[in-house]
Image (cartoon, rainbow, N blue to C red):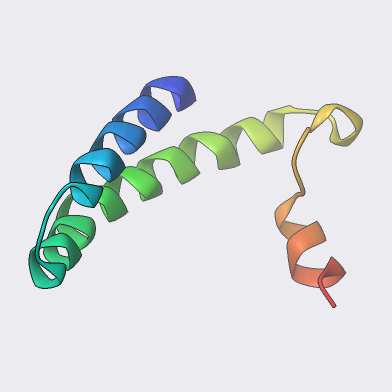
Length: 69
């Protein structure tokens, strides 16, 4: 599910980058890219709860929240 979401997000982000006008690009990002980012986030959040911390390859939410100085 995460890989499918990532592929859709990458495709949509590339389409946004090809748009000429900033206002058009901004609306596309809001309407198309942001929902895909949320979709991917949901998958990754679920995977994080199912994976032991020592096997999780990216910073956890707690790491980001309390570890950034």
